[in-house]
Image (cartoon, rainbow, N blue to C red; front, side, top):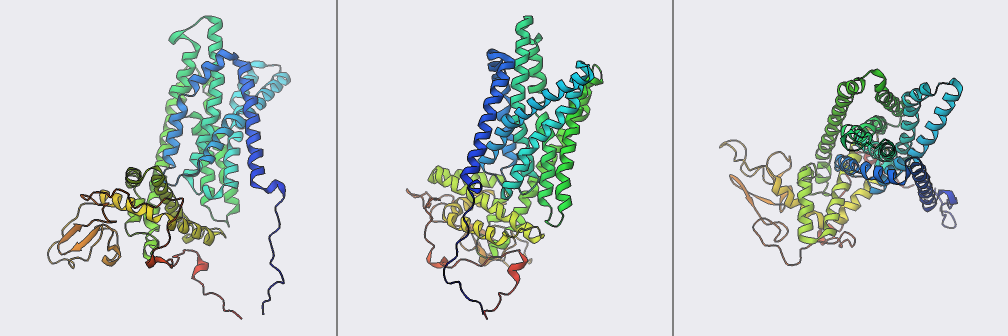
Length: 494
């Protein structure tokens, strides 16, 4: 017979270095110091005027690259702090490591071989790819280890690696463009014939994706490792390493293209870089569509359990419908409601991915805790999100089709139309009422439907102050967990 302790036990207090604010403070201090040092080094090499010119030109591709990676991450958007950390690591810490290590290695090789030209070539084609890709991969590794909940697949690896490389390329472009401007100042060149214009065309116009393309290979390795089960420890270790080696090889080929003759750069660019960029772009877009399909396939279990509205799996699996829902919430209840709807969409997507991992045996020991956290987050935002998602579902629903006479029972497909796979009773009150021979729209949520004026004060509940449960939902639905432990009977009390 189990006995209770004579007094309540408390978990041991963590050591001071294990506290969150200590780690955040140390990381912020490290990045700030690295930023100041790299700023001083670049300014020393380029001069103040060259630094300002390089900064103004190098910042141009950054918004486009960041917007592209953020677009890829829209299905299950990660927290902004991860992206800020990755960009700061690439622009400050990784760039500082690369400058110091590359300079030291090149000088050592030149001294040992008495061949400065050969040392520069060896440093550009061998030393720089190894050092730079390793420094950028460190940020992906840190996010993979310490933000594991935010790193669940290939898209997360691509976004993390791409943002890190964008920060690194930003600092490197400042250095190259600043030095080119200093050269033009000495030679008196200007306009399209200047070194600055040529450097800008090659690094910013032709190949702004070069560094992100290299490091994305490392991110893909980490992303596939995140999809592997915990039993495959060797695979989880080798896949990131294989991605890193591929990134180093591609980087070395790109840097060494100038040694392949007069048209070596154009040959490598056209025959290798552009096709690889197109292939990886197709891969990440295909993976993004696969994530949306996962949302559509995994969430119906929570519909059957009563946690989600019947049309939400279809709505949440469409980026167009998601955007309509956020716009509807913003138009009727303001920015806070739109933010709550966006959070609802993100939590529902995380729930679908979590259930998929549990169904495939890849869930961790905290599966049940994480599932309850996500369901609670959805439950507290349901009053805000459901009217907006209902509007988006009706706006994007396929047109009704009248069944052929003699086929099926009239009204058997009541609800949002064919393809949802739910019984008519489950759809009562969510946008369409069944009637013999077709579908008739009704006004959901009292005035938010098409053709009905919205009330003066929309019935949205702020996300920061969850509404009390309605009388018919005091007890929450059961969990449709995919974890094997949830299907085992509870042990009897002795």
